[in-house]
Image (tube, rainbow, N blue to C red; front, top):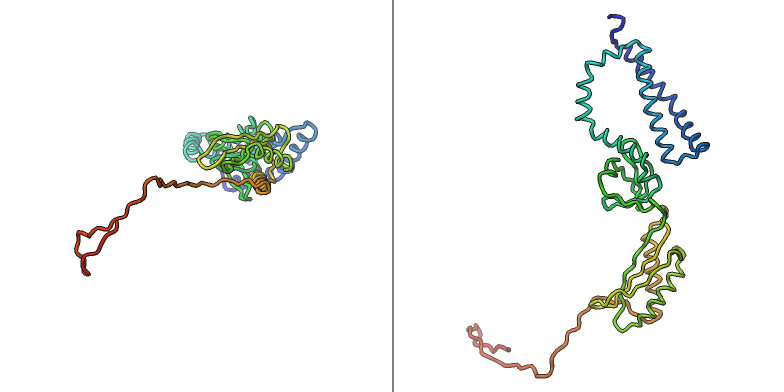
Length: 288
C-alpha cells in the first residue's frame, strides 16, 4: 500500500536510528565486558567474545527495530533474499570465512592475546583478535594483519599455548686437541652466570660429534618467553660470554680448514722439452 511503501525519508530515518543505536551501544558493550571480567572472572579472550556477540545482537535488534519504527515491512526484502544470498555467497565468502574463523578462535582459544606465535616463518606477539583479522606484532616492531582463516588453515606454532617456557639450542665447535671435559665445564659456568637462563629445567651440555674440522658441542637450555625481549638476544649474549670464557682458557673455536700433505718419498722431476708449435721468436723450451 502507499502508507507502507519504502521512501527516501523512511530509509534516512532507519539509518539515523541505526547510527544512534550503535553510538549508544558502544559504551554499554565496554561496560558489559568490564563487568564480565571483574565479577565473573572471564578471561580476556572471553571478554572479547562476549563483546562481539553483544555487538551482533545489537545490530540485528537495531535493524528490526528501525524497520518496524519507520513502518517498512520486512516482506519488502523477501524478494531480494535469493539474490542477496547469492551475492553474499560469492562476493563476501572470504569476509564471512574470516568472521567465523574469528569466532572459532575466541571459542576454542588455540591462540590468545599476548601469545607468541609463529606462522609462515613470521614470529610475533598477538596484539588483538578482530572480526576479520588479527594483529600480530613482530619482534622488530612491525605490525602484521593476519586474516583469521589463516590460523585455522595453516600450521601455527604457539610458543605459549601451555606454558611460557621455550628451549633454545646453541651449537658450536672447538679445535681438535681441546680438552673436552674442560669445555663442558666452561659452558656450565656460563649457563649459571647468565641471568635469563632457567635452572629448572636443567640445561644440558652434549659432546655431540667429531666434525670434519671441529669437536661439536650442543647446548640446550630453557628460558621464559618474554614478549618484550627477543629470545635471539639471550642466545647472542650467551655466545658472547662463551666466546670470552673459551678464549681466556686458551680454547680455540674451530673454523673450516683443510690440510694438504705432500708425498716427499720421491723427488719431483722437472724436465725441459721443445714446444711443438713454432713461435714468432723461434722455438721456446717448455717446462714440464
